[in-house]
Image 1 (cartoon, one colour):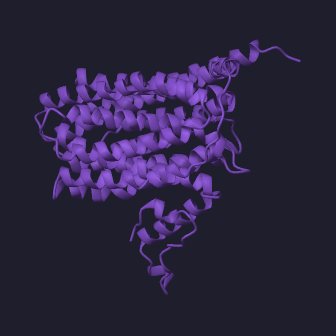
Image 2: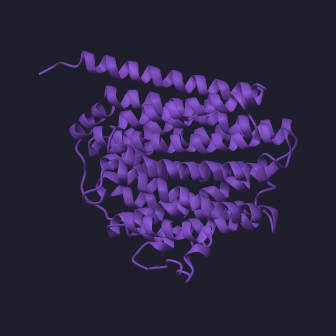
Image 3: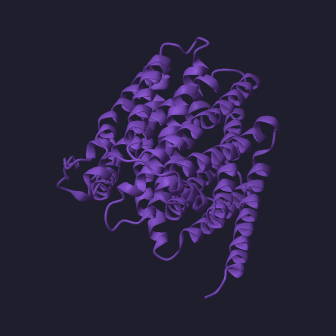
Length: 431
């Protein structure tokens, strides 16, 4: 039986008992036991363990919310209506960054102790708004409530990135720490994926949203127990930190991961409308979501291993190359099966590249500028994702042609990134 990931943290051994005949042990039980072992290994300090618990509850709640909204906004209405509703939803995913980014950048960078309270507020707020949303699906409150939940989810993402360097366990690199958070987020989304699809079908979306709210509330206590550091960061410290956050290294990394995010947004809705035309419905969407979550998990597992032989910038190049070559091949031989393979591979590349980029920002930016940096760059990445998603909303593109275009574009971004890195190294003064 699968147990919620946060139940594995804190020293309690819930590893499934080993059958007498290991050869007959179910595969799902083997996977669960290995996931437990991996998560317990990641939670090496109480502080980092609490951050993992917050990440697990948030990721699981977000996955349940996404499935509920997909059933409400996409598959339950005609395609022309779905396109309009999805376009409005995309606008709502961008707007929270425009509101929350300037506010969080100022608060997080001025006051060292604000990180914990911002995380608590975002966790409680998501639970409350999701609970209310469960009773307001057929009213005009649907979009304002969804907007509020998205706003708090984005705030949590920014706070997590800014707080992580302070909570990294001894002996763990930034890539390892970011990968641990991505890993438990992906596991959490996968654990709730199948139950979430079942809840949408019966008893319904309202019940699933109530479950999502309860899952969000699981993260409140560990968020409240995160460590806090008192004190104010001086203006000159913040100015210097922001300058470091704008370095050429960070901007080049933003180009690479932003390109990946743009292509990911395009691919999600390109394949979603293709599945809809082939009458796969919410089951097909759930399978793609599961493949993407599994890919993100594998990406988080692969990134620390890649870091042993590559720098963060090298990981970005490898991810773009993998995504580009796979997309081109799937476009040549497109089918529902190969589409699933593509989503999985893109999940691997996206997961590893995001881990690498977060590590670059955290490595290059001192404490006084991390809130500003993550607020700014997460906004840019979300804009890139929405821009990519708008293309299949506006243009009807055949499945094969769109997938091949993704492959060509991913390779082009990778080449541009390598050219930029080469020029930067050539222009750098030698000692």
